[in-house]
Image (cartoon, rainbow over all chains, first blue to last red; front, side):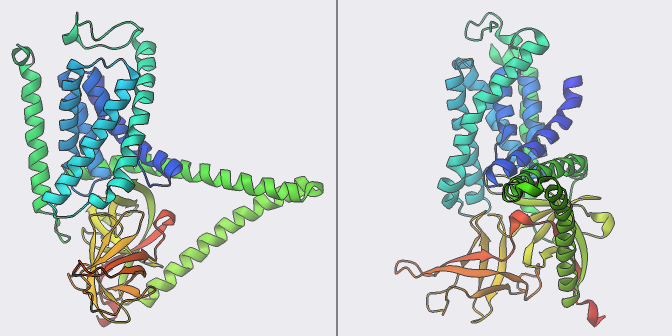
Length: 179
Length: 279
């Protein structure tokens, strides 16, 4: 229950924090989308129920605070959650190199969906932003995803005494409970 | 097997998808600037985030301020080794006064600007800057309780800043003119040629739909044309920084450097009523 009560507050904190970090490090030019990394983390580590709610809440808060079109990131985060969940079924999500790669890929997926929406629905050509905004941002997310996963693993070990693993994957050798 | 084991979760995901799609299609259909439809939950999130954003804005400003002051003071100390302590104290005091003086200057500028225009304004402070890949948004500390409504233009002493796209009770979201989703009807002050100013993020903006036979030069000033009914006529937007004529294209390729420095935006004015002096 505490998870569902804390989630909205946590999501607001994360979205506000990521903008502050972006302002300090990149002068607002790039954003380290911690919220997106959290959604990927949810896809890799949490169960479908908790993870989908996390993706929805993070997307909605991101929409309310950052986006000019409400609902866009809510939908995109849900898509990325489902995609990352599917990826976690076939990939070893304990390897940080793979985590970085998937972070980069999902950041590109998010940006491709944003471009698609702007092009098809708003009739706005956002292609010019690919080399200046989207690619650097995807690379930043790719670099920060393993850091986030590493920190979360430390937190899991601190709280539960061992890294978190999904109940529905009990017995699945790909997800190890060992450190 | 997987479906049977997780049918509850899958139903939940399906419901969340449907909600997200409904939200998105509703908001895409009702994106008009004068739209007054704004959801309760959106307001709630904006209100709940405001204290965190204020806190983080203050912390980030004080971190960068302290760093700048530190670098500045190290320079002073090196130059004046003999008067280390005294100069250090005096410099710290001077910085405090300087900050106050700069703020007074900024506010005086805004006040003078406010008086010079025939509109009613509400002054507001920027409490957060929210940026995503294509979004350039700031949050201000005034809301519907202060008389703000969605679609109202926002200006600073340097020129047009943007327009309100979300208004909560005590805070509001401003879509900056450099947001890639923002379009403003504009004209060139010298030639009166009309076009559309579209945001390009931190790279400024582009001026669209100016035909190749128009006389445009670098340095030409761009102002709002008053068309479209969102922004009043004559607000300063920026200066033409680059013009290119391509044989293969119908229109000129024009880049515009906005007058407003969006990275240093602290105080803004929201235009609440037009033509106050005619009443």
